[in-house]
Image (cartoon, rainbow, N blue to C red; front, top):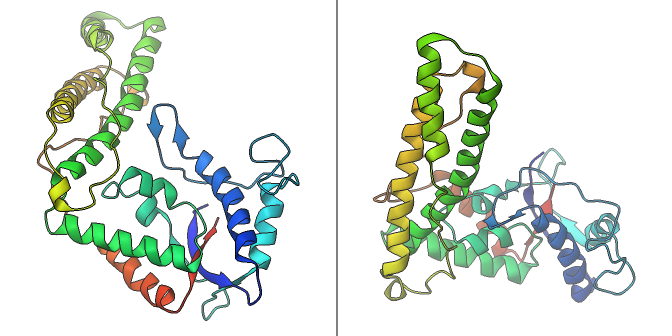
Length: 286
């Protein structure tokens, strides 16, 4: 199941503060699915539970609002746009929420319902940022974004590699293959932990605010070097184990990576523009 945005706007006479409260209940639960220890990772699905968001039994209105009931109340206060087939018009939230070109905080904040003025502000902000990076600006912050995603993926990849190597301790392997496995396994166990990388801070508000940072840039270079080492060790390990024991190599991380135009992002801007201009917001549909 995917998570989509659907154009919607408040029904005439609907209380906007109530809509905001209900949308916040929904957003808090959905965004809890993207929080992981040490950082942020995207979700692939979610379901709204029949229980309080925080387990306290009390929602923002003090009446014990449950997420599923909050969503039902929210939908009843919105006019949702449908296409010619009678289905809701929609676009994947992942176009922003999973897109490493956009600041991390913006990605996580994308998983929410937005009232018309909120949607207009967010879309304008995304358009501006996309225009900056396509023009080659914000390169230092963009490199940090790419590095942070690589760091998050590397933590999982190295943990899986070590687990697979540990599993071979109980397997019997004979002859020269055993000797090669012993050497490959030793290299896995000798790998140090990935060098720490602080998460990206708030994005620059102008190209003049984007610049080098010695500590950050050294940490990114150290991460890139470690990733290359893990990739080499993983490749060697995969050569000497059965196919079902092999580990996916970490995604490559190029310090010189530069973004190109993203057709999917541009298609989203073309899709959402008319709705924003006609006073629609974005309802989070899962």
